[in-house]
Length: 315
Length: 315
Ligand SMILES: NC(=O)c1ccc[n+]([C@@H]2O[C@H](COP(=O)([O-])OP(=O)(O)OC[C@H]3O[C@@H](n4cnc5c(N)ncnc54)[C@H](OP(=O)(O)O)[C@@H]3O)[C@@H](O)[C@H]2O)c1
Ligand SMILES: NC(=O)c1ccc[n+]([C@@H]2O[C@H](COP(=O)([O-])OP(=O)(O)OC[C@H]3O[C@@H](n4cnc5c(N)ncnc54)[C@H](OP(=O)(O)O)[C@@H]3O)[C@@H](O)[C@H]2O)c1
Image 1 (cartoon, rainbow over the protein chains, first blue to last red):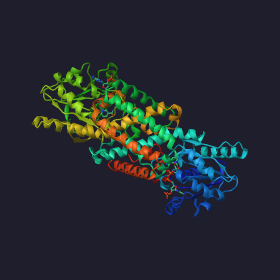
Image 2: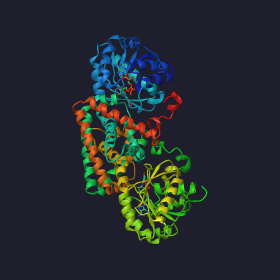
Image 3: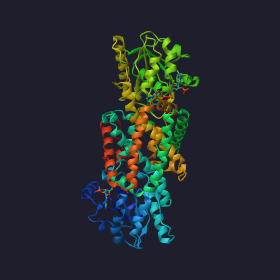
Image 4: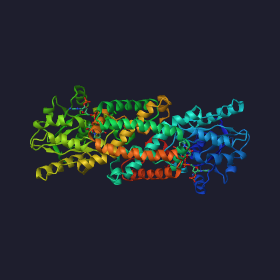
């Protein structure tokens, strides 16, 4: 990096995503200075201890000098945080977020608009099952998609803001895409929100089967169940907010999912092997498409068998 | 290894599991000689080319000298293969299998019983999403559970057979457990069969959402969906047979799953955030239990971020 994209940024909420942005911005020289704030005293102290940037004692102090303010709090907290931040921001500064539901995020940010700042909601398609400042790392956004959902303004200064924010995320290693927030929420409902809901649910079901002990579920989880428990370990507050704020799109996907599952259930009950074969064969092709698109590693079994490549040299 | 557990074994079906047994038996000295047979000319040739052992031209030739015959074919093929194998086996030899449904496997093997061989069904809780002989590797069974479901016989020779088969799997690196086949099928229905069905189903649902393009599903799959596609890439024939033969236990789990999902659906529809928080918090604990039990790697995000540990030294 020759010049930082923004002389100064402020990160509000220093959990997994906020801490990762702080580390990446410093590592790749995307920002001159990084100011941080978190509502929790404890988290602020841990963020300072990790050397993530200048940790401010108040939200107002953190945002005052920033050219770009990034809200990295759960979606349900965005409205309050945006309302508290905007009056203290510099005129012409950018206000963005990383929330997983963009309709709600846009509404929350727009409600705080006083005409002086550029509101450009965004969402990194990157994360892990961990949370908190210790979980952050600089390479989280590398080769990941970042979706911006800018407003309809064709104002020159606004478009320059969108351009700068795009370059900022590119400097962090992301590939940036723009779309409208309704489309974002429909796409993410099926690619992210429904998978998480299903994972949470199957874990609950397994817990409550009184015919099988919990210890056995854990012991024999290598049969497939463990794959689901990774995303079911994700932050409960974040996910509660996602489901409360992307209700319609999630319920639509869920309806489809249940309908499809009823068809498989019927095929099992009536022993319709041909139908099962057709569905399972179709499912197989999508893994290949995802690997070919660079959206997952080709490591067999998620790389859980470290000696695999060395041994056969084939797989 | 000082002495091989069996002077000679025969592996029928040289796909992922059969080829892995062949490689492991040779690597860890668990068998003196390894004979192989597969129904497919092409697979037999590939198995020979990979140097997996002595590939026979007929099933009869493969099993004739074996002290232990391991059937590694889809569950639906077990009955025919067992019936063809038993008359040509040595008196006192062991007949076992690796099928994922033990009630059905036991019935298939017992139907072929002529009183001369020891029938001891089994199931390794180890596998990958790949199939075919090229996918096999020697370390597949290391630290994995192997479940044996022996019959009720207290005959000394039979018990000695169970003991020898236990030592064979231990030599391959497995931890061996015995249980009755009904219990096995109930436990595996929730830890393996239901997760696979759900994974197949969510992939089908995503394919068929006409409001979202397939390309977008692939592109943004890092949001969670990709985790499900790994197990949905598993062999269709194998899984068809599992669902056709463990019908009752799978339908029972599926009923529970749908019931639990309806409760989550209602909580989303009515905005019951407390209920969602409770369920999601509970789900989080099981990941930790699985990692603590050594049943999955603790690598964040399935180790997809290779620079993670180097950078922060924390996570
Ligand atoms: N995790 C992912 O995979 C992922 C991926 C893409 C986008 N996102 C989005 O990123 C955002 C943050 O998620 P995360 O994973 O980084 O969560 P996280 O690790 O839990 O961090 C969120 C942080 O925000 C703090 N916070 C909550 N309310 C606040 C407020 N009013 N003012 C200031 N700070 C506040 C929290 O403090 P307390 O702990 O004290 O509440 C916490 O430290 C969410 O909107 C989520 O939708 C997450
Ligand atoms: N994959 C796993 O994760 C896993 C884990 C534990 C247990 N298992 C069990 O292991 C068994 C084999 O699975 P796999 O993953 O190894 O499948 P695979 O890679 O598809 O191998 C099965 C092999 O058996 C052959 N075969 C089919 N019918 C046969 C017959 N009548 N006589 C001889 N060979 C025959 C197949 O030939 P064609 O290809 O020509 O049909 C194929 O080469 C199944 O019972 C499965 O339930 C699998």
